[in-house]
Image (cartoon, rainbow, N blue to C red; front, side):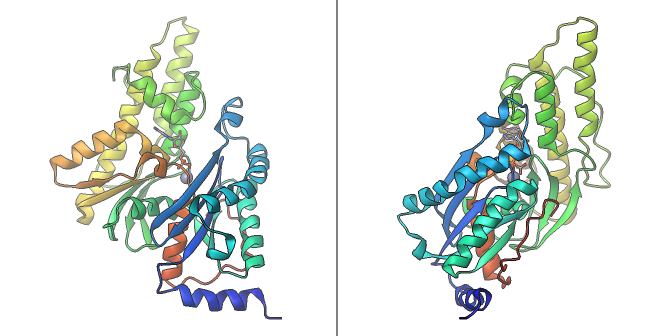
Length: 350
Ligand code: KG4
Ligand code: ZN
């Protein structure tokens, strides 16, 4: 009997120049179990089982609980994604799966499931980098978009300015030196007593506030494109704790608004400098914090003034989903990536 890899690689070669076949994609890197079917850079179906309600009571994601819930959800989600696409497993030509970065146990659920499925169907398996996947959400949302362009990638684990040179070739121009911006939103929300995940809560809370609380100056000139979020995060934590110690009531709305304004302004400044320094006229946004309306509106406004086009994926494509992983898989196949064999491993620090 011929080996899996031999058969899968043969099939993979036949897919390279096509865009009419179906990829089933799986994402389980954190607290969303997600499955999608894509065809080329188009979404055929997408389903997500969010664990937010489960982790809320702990104030953040508990890795062990996340893994267990991925196990419970994944099989039904695959059925659901296929049903919505009006397809069966026999119609699927390849499997794409997130293999990093993320929580090890959570990633392993998706990777193991994808391996078993690809092996049993004898079809190619493609491991996809979660971060590159986030960027790929833009290829779905903006059908005319092709590299090169600048991407502002802002999530719970990453804050980066990327020069997207190709569908899979991305150069980091600037990145956070400490916390990710999403992490800072979550932490500030927590200290204000707002539930997990903090980003959308801060956004809502800030709507009723003003930018009146002084925040540390975190932007360090135009020479580099790096970020730092631990300074503002700590400033907010200290402000809240000191106020409590002095029995001074704080205005949550003002704290949320001041934090959000400072955090977002740093993203905008660096994005604009990146475009200017590297000669780009297009900036795409990716990652969960990209769902933030204040960021979306202010970035668009500021860039419009200087003739830079801002591309925003719809909010549901900013946060974790499997469609972006499917599209990442599609371009990996197109660009000649080798089939990930059954030794594909989860890599939390990819
Ligand atoms: O991309 P994502 O879903 O998962 C990671 O790969 O990390 O991003 C999650 C992060 C969380 O920190 C969450 O609080 C933040 O994105 N987020 C937001 C908003 N929606 C999600 N941050 C600010 N404003 C939002 N509306
Ligand atoms: Zn993500």
